[in-house]
Length: 116
Ligand code: HEC
Image 1 (cartoon, rainbow, N blue to C red):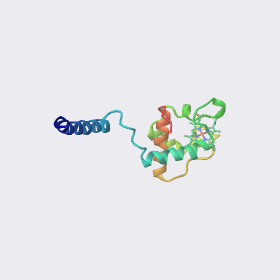
Image 2 (tube, rainbow, N blue to C red):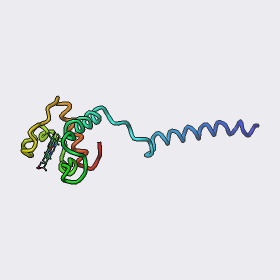
Image 3 (cartoon, protein in one colour):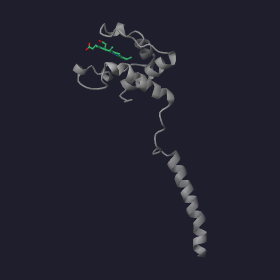
Image 4 (spheres, rainbow, N blue to C red):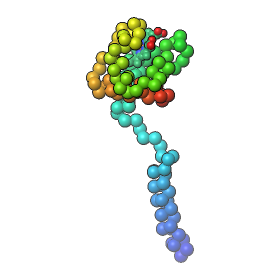
């Protein structure tokens, strides 16, 4: 009983240390996406993916290979002038500046291989 009483605080400490390590460790669950990321992913899906697929054969007009290597600043410029990229795109992105930057961020991430 005495021994148990001595060990109990130790067990508590170990538990505390363990949970702190879990919280700060590299295995901590990924932070939920920010509001800006969610907005960007939403714009990408509702606008670009109304005509493009994300990945797939060229016959299905995939977006990911077409935006490979795009920076956010490039994407920001290009989404407002899609007709300059291809005469097949007669519709450019119409949105607020916040939405345009969010979309540009989503396109940059897509071009780096991330999936929204
Ligand atoms: C109204 C339909 C439509 C929408 C919306 C659209 N696209 Fe396109 N896009 C097309 C078509 C059609 C092509 C031409 C495919 C081809 O030539 O094989 C194309 C081609 C492209 C190309 C290749 C241009 C080239 O020939 O070099 C890029 C890059 C591109 N789209 C990016 C985007 C991005 C980014 C968005 C969203 C901001 C978007 N598109 C939204 C229909 C669309």
